[in-house]
Amino acid sequence: MRKIALITGATAGIGKATAQKLAENNFNIIITGRRIKQLEELKNELGIKYKSDVTLLNFDICNQTETSQAIDSLSDTWKKIDVLVNNAGLSVGLNSINDGVIEDWERMIDTNIKGLLYISNKIIPIMIARGSGHIVNITSIAGKEVYEKGNVYCATKSAVDALTKGMRADLLNHNIKVTSIAPGMVETEFSLVRFKGDKERADKVYQGFTPLSAEDVADAIWYSVSRPAHVNINDMLIMPTAQASATLVNRNNA
Ligand code: 8X3
Image (cartoon, rainbow, N blue to C red; front, top):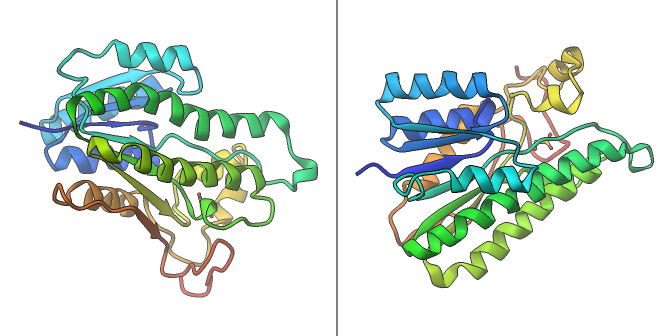
């Protein structure tokens, strides 16, 4: 029987690549996100390419009622979720704390922390009732190091890092694995969202070196979820070869 993975923020980037990777490896997939067109296209692709059964849930993870209703709408078969990939997250703005935009802070806190908690709150009881499960939280190098102007984004990813450890402790006696996947620089929509659609500025972030791709991160997620039952990957920090820390990048080797 195929396992079931629910992947949040699956409309693009790491979430989409993870859906593709897990479908390729015989998972049935629940994809969630706000952009219905992208979800529908991905659903069709996964069905045709990998013969996966796919359910899409179109909702805003920042809205607790919508999140709760979306999970409640799943059939009993689809509720048997083996793997939850908490991928939905974003960075908005890159300002000093004294120039911070409250609205940007709230979007990051609402998505990266509160949204992750809303969906986890719905899925964890299902995993506990089944006596197994695996939660993969997408954190970041930004959860391990705080860099200039990263302030609130770094704080949200530090929170996800702490929640990962908290989940692992609290769910230990329920046989639920909890993994943190912490990428460095990945070329996705990330910088375009951070810079509010400024493509030129976003493109510059990845100039002069080869960043990670969404597929590189999806590979690590697949590695984590495909370990034997007695093995848990606690934490994986993945960087481009050209990146040594949050701020140290070799841009001379493109
Ligand atoms: C994304 C990586 O270094 O831009 O989480 O914060 S970074």
